[in-house]
Amino acid sequence: MSDDLPTEDLADLYEHAPCGYVSLAPDARIVKVNQTLSEWLETTGDGLLGRSFLELLSFGGKIAFETHLAPLLRLQGFVNELAFDILKSDGSKIPIIANAAEKRDAEGRHLFTRLTLFKAVERRTYERGLVAARSRAEAAVGAEHETAILREQFIAVLGHDLRNPLAALAAGARMLTEREDLSERGRVIVKEMSGSVARASALVVNLLDFARGRLGGGLTLTREPDAQLTPVLEQVVSEIRIIAPDREILTEFAIQQPVDCDPARIAQLAGNLVSNAVTHGAPGIPIEVVARTGDGSFTLSVINGGVPIAPDAREQLFEPFFRGSVRRSQQGLGLGLFIVNEIAKAHGGSMEVTSTDEQTRFTFTMPLQSEA
Amino acid sequence: MVLTRNNVNVSGQGSRSMMFAHGFGCDQNMWSTVARDFEDDFRVILFDHVGAGRSDLAAYDSAKYSKLDGYADDIVEIGRALDLKDAIFVGHSVSAMIGALASLKAPRMFSDLIMVGPSPRYVDDEGYVGGFSAGQVEELLEFLADNHLGWSAAMAPAIMGNADRPELGETLTNSFCATDPEIAREFARVTFLSDNRADLPAITARTLVLQCHDDIIAPTAVGEYVSAQIPGSRFMQLEATGHCPNLSAPTEVTAAIRSFV
Image (cartoon, rainbow over all chains, first blue to last red; front, top):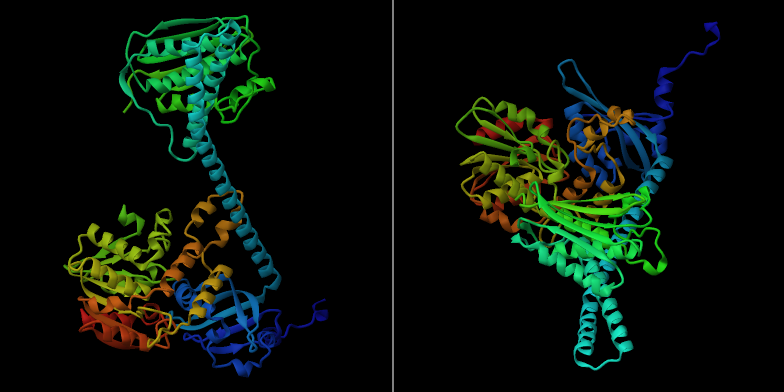
């Protein structure tokens, strides 16, 4: 059988292999080169012998060869999968992928560096495409990020600028109530206006806190080591009673110990929770606000009746801009619970939700003393 | 921790310390043969610049390392951590200049400075031949962006832990001269666009300049310029060719250093 197989001509294999071969002296001069590579370079082997291999490289290639490849070859004896360009005599480039290895004698002396080269035109085109795609993607993400920051700055500025006209409206409504002789109908309208202004102000506060958090300012606490929370919570509830006079709000406060907290933030947290209960709870069922200290912690629960929160929605409640399936007219920005959760975390505490057909209960728990 | 950040390795014994610094493109392995020869009578210090070898890549800060000063500050920090006084600094390529800057920042840390293939400015200027044109430096930076000339990021082990891609463990085999390609590009920019000519006359350390033949990165004229600008320095022409005599002719480099210290 073997009689039928042709014999391979090793000399011819070297000269006309489907890859380029070149051997370099330790000083990088070319000592042997095959026909294939000579043809790629459109020159003769004789024209290459004795020349430095560096002459076949672009300037960048030369520097990379001297500073990185030559040391790597000396230290390691081989380098695989090099990608670089070799220059034809007319200066045009051939993209190459190459393996290189040092040939050393028995004493370890460096005799030659051998390189096997493959043309890699398509591969290089593909790689450049990948690099370009990555650059474009990075640029797009960068632009997106900048837009997001601008948007948040815009929110912050807008929120800030809305506070003054709202304060003026609130002051005007107060003056009307206190100093003007209004008709019954006028008093009702002013009261509703005051309620709307209070809700708008609460929204603005949430918006500002959200924007500050996003812009890296974070939520800041002004802690009072022995804050008295009962009057704070009573104030919160009474304000909401004014806004929503037709809702029954029951309170049960058993706060026996001082709490190391930022009382204004706790008021904000409680205000958000009770407003939520007013908005989402069933109108006929009283809202309960329960606060107590004990076992080294402070807990505040706000309980309302009505349709329970769907389990999958419960997981996202504290995400910014999350708005459950509520009537369009009731939609806020979806920042209230996000801010509540941020305030809870800033106090080293946590939020918990339970929701059944009987009741929906939000509970805030925090340690009486700050950990730090 | 400075010593971990720069993968500092201390070996040998002796009353004097000798610190070896690698240049652009490789890591401390560049010096291993030469350094070993000094372990009998010197305390030998090897390290990797941040971004190279087994340094802490997380410590890389583009702003800090946008100037050679950032690298020189690291050397001063290593020197302080090891309590160096009147030590010998041996710097190859760009690290020759980085060491010179460190010697200016902490004058008592290094009494001797050995500069192997130094260049205070690679790009030609009026009345100055650095060997590179500005266009060539741009070409080099483009080349580094475009070619993965065996660069392998030191992050390889993290990738190799990825069971989904076992081929990566096989291919990322270069155990020397590991350099994150992005960092390599930034280091190249800082190196080849640096100009520290004005710092040379201020150098007070005893200085030896070692120059190779046919060094396309630091030509002989540049080595002579460096030596002429540093007061009282010695210039020594080596037989070795190319840019890395510490690897191609370690015996000659060792002998030259010995003759000086």
